[in-house]
Image 1: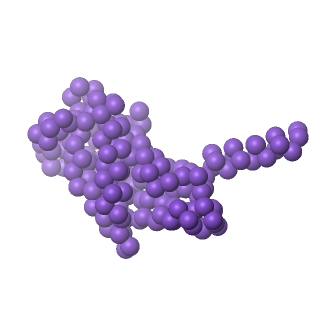
Image 2: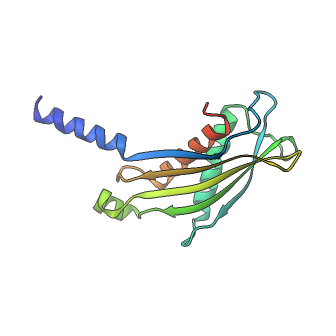
Image 3: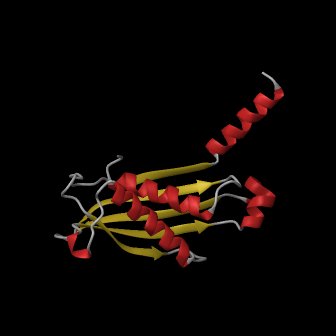
Amino acid sequence: MTKPRYLLLLVAFLILTGCASSAVVQKPMTEPVIQGDTRYQIGNVIDRTERGVPDHFLEALKGYINSELRSRRLLATEARDGNREVNITVTYYRMRSGANRLLWGAMAGKDGLRSTVTVVDRRTGQVIGESEVDTYSVMAVTSENDIARMHGEEIAKFLTGGR
């Protein structure tokens, strides 16, 4: 292989391994997701971090989750229509500034978000599922918005049973 190919392969590898999301299911969903019957509504999105999460980031996260659920036809159109409530508690948040990201890249540390997602059956008030979701990026090519989107997608996967 020539040097440009090695370089291209290295860049592709770094981009693919620089971002990730994972979910550790604390309590698997006890009730299956039934298309046409299951409707989620986003309840509280709470910041429990030491430094605080900007409000615009929490709103973006909520928007991405709503979008994912809407595309799967699982989003309640009105509050009274939802039979499951999703509550999100953000426990860790770190975002580098754009300048740090550009100047230092991976050496500036990783951006990240961790939250606990709890699903409550609105009829019984019982917790029917719980997961800890962790999303991070060590690359300089992602933004705060990318982290919110990836985190929202991972939460939606948990809510839909991996679909």
